[in-house]
Length: 227
View (cartoon, rainbow, N blue to C red):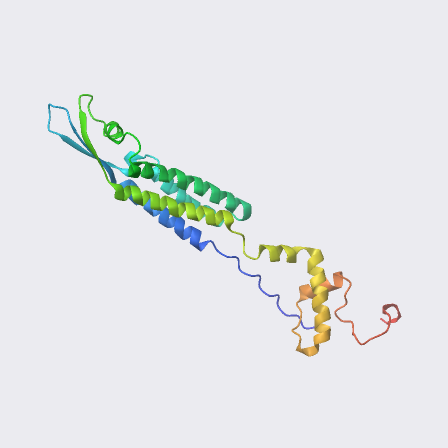
């Protein structure tokens, strides 16, 4: 019998899109943390008026750490599979929701912006905040980055390993042997035009009780055949 090399297993789909979205999201959060979110103008009546620029990392201290979490999540995507990868997607979605909160609040004007700006600028007790100018571009950038991370998380929670169902069925001895018997039978009916079977298929067929060397035109009972 001529044995052919077993066919290669189907390649598993790589999570390219979620990883790309996570990379963009991490870059967006990091860039936003370096940009000015609020400019606060204050005066204490004794010295010159003071102007302080508060960047994203100051306005929301967790912005940079969240960007680093998304970077770590990229490595984790390749390290885990199946249910763990889906759980990772849920964690990423939660991180994305947290990252979007400060930018959304600043964009819609929620919260005491002037009071918070004065506290973060560490103004003297006698100083009075005259105005707090918000910069929407970096806030919107953080929201977009968080949205990209959210999409990546959703994709990971819905993702299935490519060919897992087929692979699981093939790894089951019962299905594998039955399939091997069917391939041997098909080869007998196809004659020389049928491609040679692999060693694994031949052995699985023997385990299933099908003799690949048996002549289909031989009507002799198995017990009457001479060794």
